[in-house]
Length: 264
Length: 264
Image (tube, rainbow over all chains, first blue to last red; front, side, top):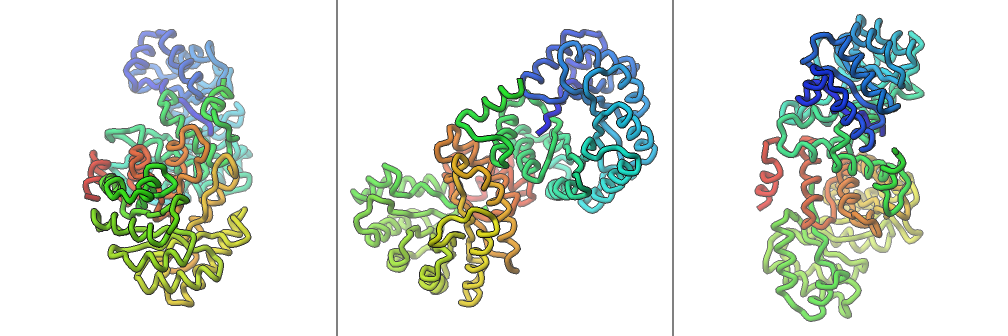
């Protein structure tokens, strides 16, 4: 599993404040903590506090790259912001994210190709979030087709079925799990799959329990990557144990420790 | 999920001692504790300490039926023992278990039919435990065919893919999950599926973590019932949350409590 750390997001108070005040130490401490906890990729998002997204995102990228060579996910809903910010990145990058809309794909797929970057693609379009598996698959198939036509390697594509909160769209969670399973069958070699996990548990009392239960099921369905809080130890234990059950991690008595050591 | 409590088994020291000493209070305390924790069925197995399995199992059934009207699983590898013991049962019963061997099916399928009993059937035969999904499916298909030929309702059949310990047969766990998924497709209406969960974590340091991770995946694959320790609260929390994600339990803030209350 590719773990994408979600904590460097301006919507979190401490991160938002650090972005506004240009406080590198706060950002770098959170970056290092996530890496030590097992994050393979660090998501970077300026959030709503940013007055100048391009300059703030560049600053964020620089601050993080000073303390780690892990990959970074450049996270913005605005293609123009990503297009500018990615220029300063030296680490491996993942663009987060495109939708199935042509105007986004036409900018972001060539951009990802040019930078040898991964690309997260949400199976949504301007019409909104799909209400069933079939709609998700249709949008994902369009994205895959666009990538193939434009010579972008689908193994660098991360299809995101868009997870819904359990208290809003409970019946859809099963559809989302099936979507992950079927996304993997869209072409050969298969595209990668990703979820923004914490969406599922908005408003839930024990968020971590719901998050990790869904994550385990998603892993069994073939999930490749997840945007999560890597400091949630129970979530990480569950993720590692799911890898064990799925035979992606060799068994030994101290398999949790062994996994964590292998990441450092 | 149908939760079959595993604690009334003579292989556990306290239960073995109580069976030998005919101490009803110990047995009844464990029976009640499992029911209060959410067990739908109580498995009853005399274990290796029993010198007279028929009489001990009858005593166990009587002791348990004095304190609960939940269903009981009459657990022995000897068809003759089950044939005698089931005569004294007044509660709903599940026979645990037959294999795919003709000499067992020929006794236990008609017996289950006669007593309106459920029947747990292991997808193994005299040749031993299958090494892959295909062998499990072949044996399960033979069992289903035998039930249909003998007019035993397959909705009362609980097919068990036989779970292996992660430190012995790690690569098989994925096959077992796929087997559960495919067992459900063997006929329409579908047979039920069951696992003896704790086998998976023999020798593992944090057994509950491995057990509940596998259980969640098995539920997503369509598992109907599991033989577990219902006093393992984290396991039960995981099971309930998996039902929530799979839309089998309606969401509310206190969904864990709501589930537990609904069982009492």
